[in-house]
Length: 297
Length: 322
Image (cartoon, rainbow over all chains, first blue to last red; front, side, top):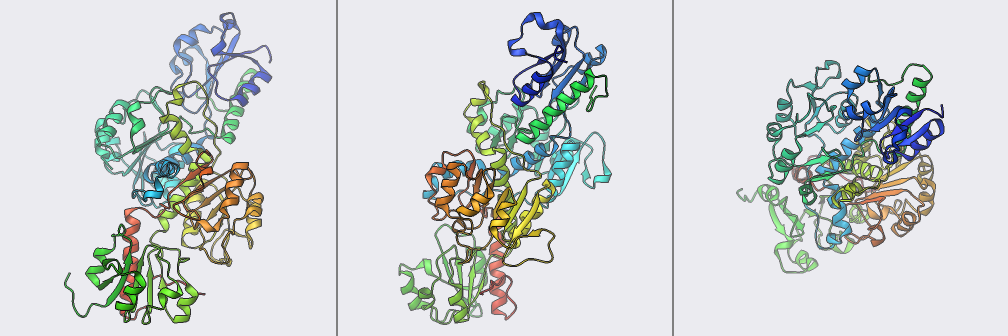
């Protein structure tokens, strides 16, 4: 398999790079010699860098795109279907990490943990206690998107005695949580609003001004979000993802009521390795003529 | 709001900022306020508190034998913290003084804080936030990987109201819970370890939420930290003195343990400055109880204890005096 050209779109995991290098002819997009175009049979992308129509058209021998992520909004799926190109992602292995982080973000935001940390490190504690913060236990949590990740978040919030409700494409009565048929109603009835759905044409900008106003001072059109936060119309936000990563609206940097993370939802040693193994396994299965493990297309 | 001669007299001590109980107390009792007098405390007590039977200590004023000697009629001491290590419990027992604490009032908030600290340490939330705000993410370079929280083995030292709530919150994370406590609790399903050293050996995380007593002082010492190991994380929402702080700082700096989330310290508000530069610690200014809900709850518990005392009913949250 060493002659199979696999194009990695950006640095994403040195473990993954090594594993791909061992098995395939790994070409790195950021050092991409034009001459290799015809040898590329697979692309490995991630949450921020996928494969658009232009790239797909540029790689005549492309058979499979294996994404090092569960989100595949950066891949032109229509084009892939048209050309018979397979697409895989990394569901399940990262579910717990993302759910863990969601709860961590809520706690960090409500209990101002990052600020508390800075407060102590700056020496300010010697001069007085930190302000009161907001209790998490018992607050109502509204989850937008009750898939694997949304469900895992719900289970965790449950243990903090948080009443959980959700909006999803379809109601899931077996899970026992309260369903709202619209995003707006969900926002009106939640203290804490968690966005855990995939990005699709239907969900783009779904957390708009109306939704944010319904949440009140106590997800996402980012410009609206920044305005709502700086104008005090929204109580706070904890964000692991942004519209144009790694660019983050700088107005957010000075705010006390935000927590900002560099898209680390699944960034643990354990999970990155599991995701990398899944990417490699999908590629190996494809080139050996076997069934894909986690196909999207 | 009327002061009736029927209202019992209650001695109250508090610091200037801890005003959250003022209304609750004045609505229900006649108050003798230590803080309304310029007299030094022992003088004030000798002059005015000889007949006082109940004392509300808002904050953690040290209650020792000397202070108690000025309160010859005292029968009830109401504390607003969960911990009573600032009280000479043995002396209270000797003098027949009942002591109450905050009971369950803070437990949810402390448990939330413990879990928050744990996730923040392992998943580098505080570090990540600083990284993004500094503008570093926009430049090329990778943010370091964190460590998975789900599935970790968590050893809880102290399985009272707070420990059990921490365990409950960590269960859906798939964490494997075990504990050490004064005695094994038959009603709970977690594995019991009779000593902290073995607990540390078998766990990835140690959470401290037990009372500070002579037996538990420095219960986490160098040996325990070495047993916990270089990937191990300590979360402390109990009291600073539960850990040998000097040794802990060395263990963190030298990589003997993997990280720590700390809400309490030996000599608050002083915090060892060697910790300030570390990315594998998250520090908090004894804020685990600091939500408006928690303060309201503890005020209610205190009032309930006082009312019970004055009407000869069982106390709501008595502390065992040993």
